[in-house]
Length: 149
Length: 276
Length: 86
Image (cartoon, rainbow over all chains, first blue to last red; front, side, top):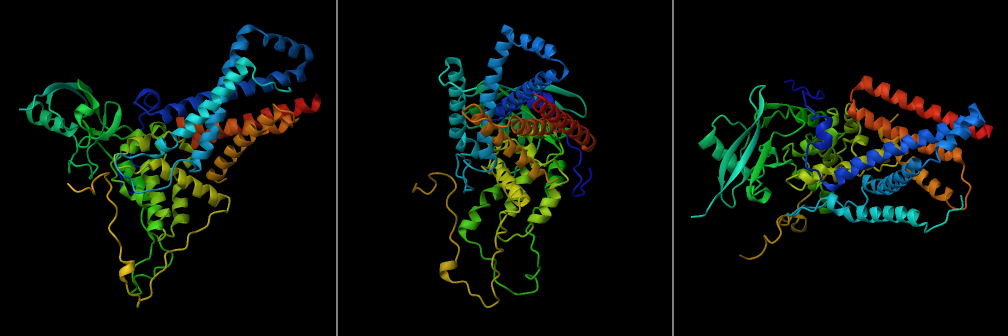
């Protein structure tokens, strides 16, 4: 095997299946998976939303037809999914902004067994953010706040 | 005589290309570690089983393996703390298997070496001048001391979900070493290590899954090191990074006084300082 | 471009998008074009990061990042056209 520095020798990334199912992971790892999934959902929505709006450039009747489609009941279900995705991604994202800048994960210290790593230190932040996300979702279900638009 | 219970050990073996699962029944008494179990198998049941171990006390880092889905040190993991019925051991993920439970850690070592894990000073004055030692306050030491505890076992690399997809990601251990040296007040190698990092996938591929911190047997907290490294790289990209002053070099005539004599470090296991 | 800077800009865009979305839902009329810009930037940056992890390597990175930049810019252009026209 090559021992030159700067040239990674053969490594064997365990692959997509291992990434998804291969290990008993902690809470933060599954939250990360969910963050990716909700990000994809939101991106699909954004693209669909832009294309829908842009259909007006083609013709107003096309736009009217597409808007009529969005009134179907299964679209309403998708809108709920969208709200869950947005609430989760937004608040988890806020947590990640803090944590990835090193805020809330604790200062370097002399580790004393049993170790309380940064993943446990930032757990209260995670719980707080999930509660805020739940609040947003609940408020939408029960129309707790009225928005002007 | 302490009674034993029979536990099924399933070992994921790779015998030169033929991968398979082999089951062994091991009589387990309280206090036995996974390493004890493997040694029993090798001695009594199958002498061809291959894996690495050395110190058997959690400091050499040789016996890293995946135990019931979670990477850990075999010598540090008691069997009955994991399961009372079935144990599954597999080689560390994200490394090519040499044989059975022994993997090649070359990729981790070459990444580590490429990222310059040593003190770098711009001006090589120390060999020329008969000075005293570099001064470093306990507070300065604490900014990187945790990251020096790394025993290079590769467990964090096995746990990292990003490495499962992208083998050009540097990985928790090399990145922790980078932060250990960048944070050291005696070091001036930040620009060189920044350049060395460019050959690997960026730090933006770390998404704080914190699996490395969860798995680390020595409490090094690689995830914390990586976030702090990320912060310093972003600050540098925005031209906001303050280069900490290199530790003052003592003039040749400096004496070490009693007040500056270093004290022993605190105990690292809770309760160890109590009288027996 | 420096990867750390790009990551920071994406995070700033995400924070900006959140702030704008929050303001948009209140009494303030926010520029829809600005909101679309930050959302598209953050969204396609995230997609590019994810895809380059699934397909690492220089060639894949060029293709994936190229596609993301093209799609993101194209969609932003559509937003501009739609907003200007109507």
